[in-house]
Image (cartoon, rainbow, N blue to C red; front, side, top):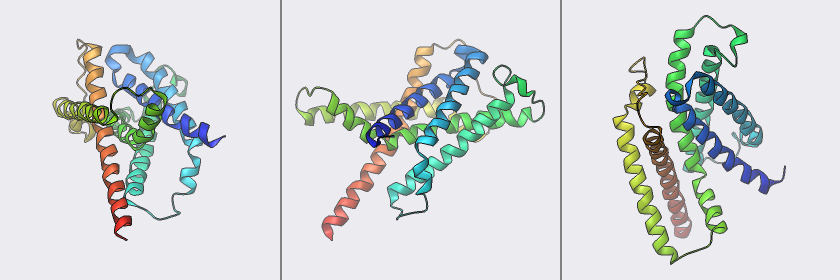
Length: 232
């Protein structure tokens, strides 16, 4: 496949998988059947994503590991393990799409693994998206007409990003996601009366928080790398 086409498909696939994961997080709004079919689509996209990124695994033991590469490798491998746990446990618990497998044992363990992996997957996929955020923003700037001084636009975008990140941090704490991620509770509280709009705004804000963290962390390392080169 052409490299330019591949580099375009990869981030688009990441975004689509993130949107699909957001849909899956709202289990209480769409029900069990839709949840399973969306999860199956996620599985297919996950397989396609790793086929497209097969070269990354071939080069994992090659070259020098910079701080940015270490962050990327840790996030990617943690996401791989988490998604395998999420999908494996989901298949075990399936009552519709994979019901023909007739799995009956280990349901309690599968449910706990699925719960923890679900929230870890959300966080790690948002962090993974943050690794590619700079490239996506560059492509968006190139495709959109420029309006107003670029410096003012940049400042406004940074303020908006910071506000989203602050709200995401508040939501992450108030919704007790850490208790699900660390299995401090065995049940997820699902508010069936909550508005889907407020739910997805909150989860988008949380995704924005983790994108913001990784994006600016990698920016710091890149600036330090440039400073070291200038000093040499």
